[in-house]
Image (cartoon, rainbow, N blue to C red; front, side, top):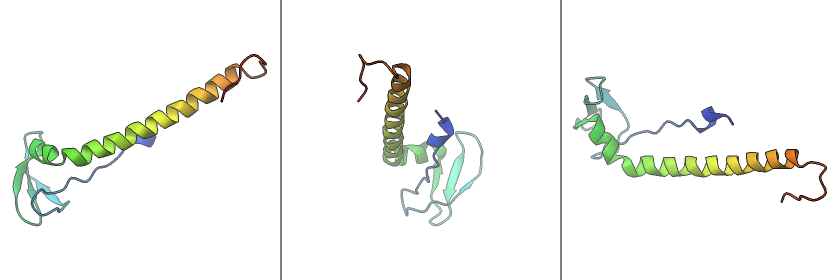
Length: 91
């Protein structure tokens, strides 16, 4: 299974204006980001918390894709393992 297939980039939105462009003053997790449109300053963790619903929705989509792909891969593995056997039938 190719794990790179599930990599995603999620655009974080400013809670005030919805802009996706931010200026970052400090690169650390406690750093402050400033919205390029409205000028609102937020800590990185605060911005992530404000976008929690959007992030959770993306994670949910990825989970569904992983489960679907794993089911397909497992079915293929079982089909190959019991190929030619008349006593087992994989649906």
